[in-house]
Amino acid sequence: MSKKKTILFVDDEPSLQVALHAFLEDEGFECISTSNMTEAWEVLETTHVSSVVTDIMMPAGDAFPGIDSSETGYHFIEKLRKCFPNVAIVCLSVIGDQGKIRHLKKLGVLYLRKGETPLGTAVKTIKQKTTGIYEG
Amino acid sequence: MANIEALRRENDELKAELALVRKESTQYLQNVAHQLTAPLGAIKWSIEGLTMVGNVSIVKRQKLLSSIYSQATILVHLIKNFTLMSNLEVDHELGQFREQPEPVDLLRLCINLASDFQPQAADKGLKINVDEQSFHDIPKLKEIKIVKNLIAQAISNVLENAVKYSVEGSTIKLSVDKSDRVELFVESVGIPIKEDEKDKLFERNFRGVSAQQAVPAGTGIGLYLVARIMKLHKGDVSVETNGKKSSFIFGFPLKALS
Image (tube, rainbow over all chains, first blue to last red; front, side):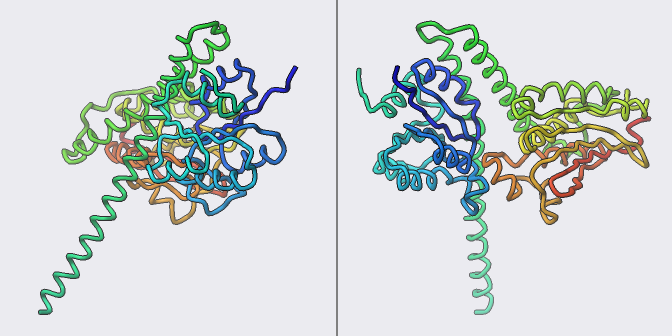
């Protein structure tokens, strides 16, 4: 049996992900929840992660002082892209101006808007991004 | 000429002030949108999950329903605060209550509020402890004259912060004391509050630096409303801190007991 692929979630409001986790776990993925950039980085350094689903507005945590919490996600994604270029990234957020979203897309990040993207679409696109298999 | 120069300077200052207000107002709206969208998004996804074709196990169904309930509770609390904002402004201008104060059992109220926040507290491994004996020591507290809805919302706002910012596994304690006035204490162990932030905490739209770092999204009106509500009751609210330990104190005049 092949090993489960791991998806790392970074969001200080994990309640939103109850449904998302439940259905991704049904699809055979392991979901890990973290609530800030520091916690997420600790996981990345110790665990093989296939994809990261991150918010923008969240705490940076102790290891990354001086980051404006309204922009933590942008810093996290830049650093992630640099240190873990093979990890797929999905940004799940309610905020983000068009210019910044365009920049994220150039970095290969998939942007999903919280509260607007249907659950089925989110599950399907995160699955595709994580496995690299696009079907249907 | 000097007058024109002074007017120009004043005009520039007003323009800068206006730009700042606009910026703050945009940030505030963004914040409010974030606060409302997150729970609504969670409810929407949970409902979608419940209606998805295929087997939705009982455990998963229970998880989704429980998520809907707790997110709806958060929304109700948030919307109550927004409604209070406008009502309280009018009440303050009139200098009177919309509803008249009536005898309320403060212990019962505190126990009910603690129970409301229990699910969120449990998620963080927190305990909410109501020191019942301290209430029994002041028998007249069973009929303290207050506007129940307002005081409930004020205590909820402080409790909500305590749950949000407390260190995992710690205990939040509610107790009362009586001296030249009646004091209700909400103690918790969380992020430190700086000395120069203590008074500003009760200003509209203010959020402490550490609070913003710990929880980026917040409306900044919760504690402002608490101060407004307490003022309407001819009382006040203050905070005492000792490192990570903080204690919010609701002070009621003794007259409220008579």
